[in-house]
Length: 224
Image 1 (cartoon, one colour):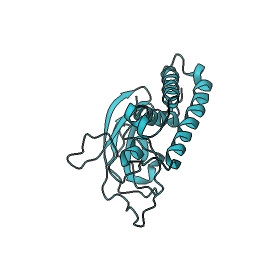
Image 2 (spheres, helix red, strand yellow; image 1 turned 90 degrees about the vertical axis):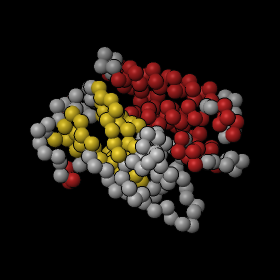
Image 3 (spheres, one colour; image 1 turned 135 degrees about the horizontal axis):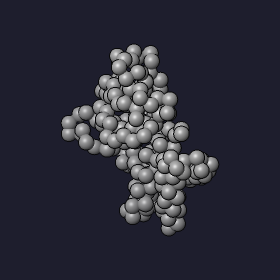
């Protein structure tokens, strides 16, 4: 059984996106109309039902095509909403809007936002078969337990390495990059080929140009 990291990352982001976009105050302020919130809620409900079947070994293979189709439909809708929000001159987007709706900031600033100068911290908060749930947190007091991104951080860069359980921690050249993510809580998926191995994950903060700050110390977990 093989999971798609793309679906796991999308699931982490879309739950936050829809919850934020369908809050009554935000619907009004962001001029989302009367039908769009209901469409997003329905798409999310359908996605969550398929996602649960996708994670279940008993039904995983039977929904692979369905979840692919659902991803294409839902992802297209989310991207259309993002475009609408960014091009509506009657809306003033806040920093919280950009963070919670995963909007890319087309910086019109004359001053370049520097790359972050500190590394995040990482905690494994839950594990199940082929999945590890990670919380990448801001280590600076008093923000250690906040789930929102730090100011001026656009995404979290990630790289991972797998070694035999009794081996020493891997050298840096053994890590490979995985897609950056715009959520501080997300799932890392691995294949059955990695079962029994020890995984090491490092993360960094990235600015709106994709420039990386320093990488964290590795967090490790056994692949179960």
